[in-house]
Length: 103
Image (tube, rainbow, N blue to C red):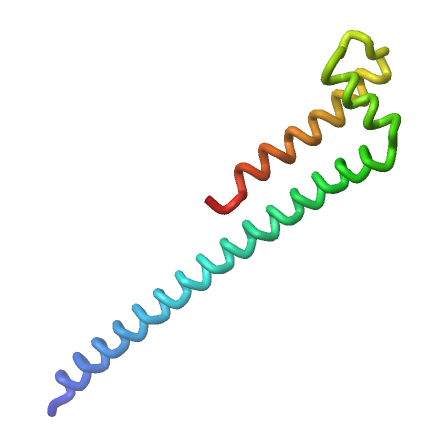
């Protein structure tokens, strides 16, 4: 076997090894992406749990949220502001959850 054949064999082996590394790295990226999505989903779920817990513990907040849904015009300016931020936070969390949930 001359040097040219050795070089060709070495190049083929190097190409196969490079392809193997590329496949491995692609699978690791896919796994990392899946883990990131799960982490984001858990954080969003935690934020929604915070809203639910706050409304469960605070009767005034719960009443405000219900009145805001049923009769928004009955709220005073401060209550409208509170309802706005509460509803916005919850809707944003729900939208984000839909974006990052596993299909």
